[in-house]
Image (cartoon, rainbow, N blue to C red; front, side):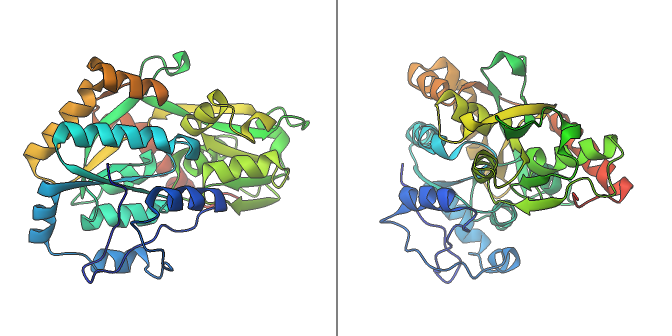
Amino acid sequence: MIQGEIKDKEGVLLQPKKESSRIFKTVKRLIVGQLCIISLCFSPLLIAKNITSLPEQEERSQSKIRVVMAAAFVSESGIDVYDEIFNYLGEKLGKEVVFVSGFSYSTINSMLDAGMVDIGFICGLPYVLKHDKPQPSVELLVAPVMKDKKYNDKPVYYSYVIAHKDSKIDNFSDLKDKTFVFNDEISNSGYNMPRSHLISQNETSGFFSKVIRSGSHEESIRMVALGKADASAVDSLVYDYDLKNNVDYVERTKIIKRLGPVGIPPVVVSSKVPLSLRKKIRDFLVSMKNDLAGKAILEKALVDRFIIVDDSNYDGIRKMKKQAQDAGYLKIR
């Protein structure tokens, strides 16, 4: 697989947004030597305008596959494992695969809308926001089923509300007037789910003393571990992987509340990708579990298998989003 570049129609390279120092280093490691690092000066709207023409997109999708992955899907420390998944997919398809990561959720949405990438491993809330538009730019492809028994062999995951392991914070109510850190405003596990919980507890007038945006789940975990924030809500996929692999910082935290389960972050495909190619991609991902090499890679990612899922798997996320809209409580405070 080639870790490569994403360009607008005038050939300008797009650089991942610096969401945290750790994730930026990971992205730089992934694409160094092939991506010329420049300052990101494009808003999502400008990215959507500065794209190649549709015929060029169709031709490109036939010769190479471009994959973008949100930080919701995997821990920074697990990016190499997903690199193996994309390499496996490229070999099966007989195509060049270009993999990029580290972009903000909104930028990833714009890249998918514009057809600048073919496959997206994205968060569930951005998927819902995109799917529910009058003319969706993506199609639900597959979703992972995690190996851990707590997921009950279903395509679901959780939001873990965490605090420092040595703190006196033992439950959600203990977070009153404390500092809360989140990764992204359109993150399901980091924002949508804790916001829904606050609404259910009638805590919409100002529960936390301070709310901070970190830019990534790893940075949120780090801030809690270092005492820079009292608590956070993080993706169980990220937390589980780091805990399993003894990654620094996560072992300094504890889970005080488990929210969910809801539909797991899905894999989507751009509507600009030809139908025949979409089917091949889906078939190869679903059949990974039946291939010795594919199964070994899935084991590393703590994934049992990829399966075809219905859009209704994400109705729980929709319900929480609507709950916030109906309550007029869109911003956690």
